[in-house]
Image (cartoon, rainbow, N blue to C red; front, side, top):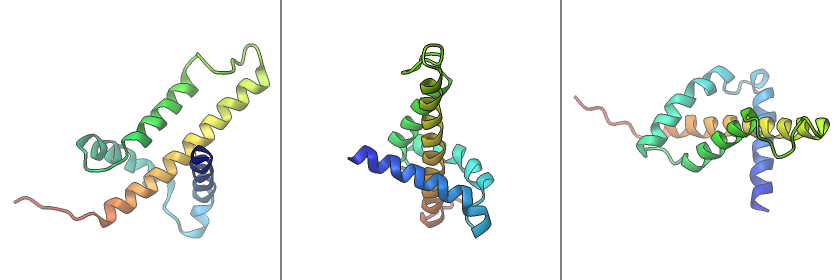
Amino acid sequence: MAKTLKRAAAFTALARALTAGARGGRPLGERLAALPRMIRATTRGDYDGGMRLAMMAAATLYVVSPIDAVPEAFVFLFGLIDDAVAVTWLAGAVLAETDRFLEWERTSPRVVVK
């Protein structure tokens, strides 16, 4: 049940992000530019995105890997569908997590060392 909710949230975030430009949401370029900062903040331990980043990395590896759950060579249509679902989930997850990160970045206190 929890996986279904997370999957639904990722697909909802993708749909919102694709229509956000017309409604004044965060632009895609801003979200993609936040990815390196999000990874850096996570590796430093400042941001709690470790497991989500690991899942996104796993989905990326699944899509680009020649080893698939349903190989395209044997079952062409189903092989493409499972990749399409993985890419759609990945896009939604990246958009949802970058949105969450940008909000965290906006509200987190900053310490300036002189």
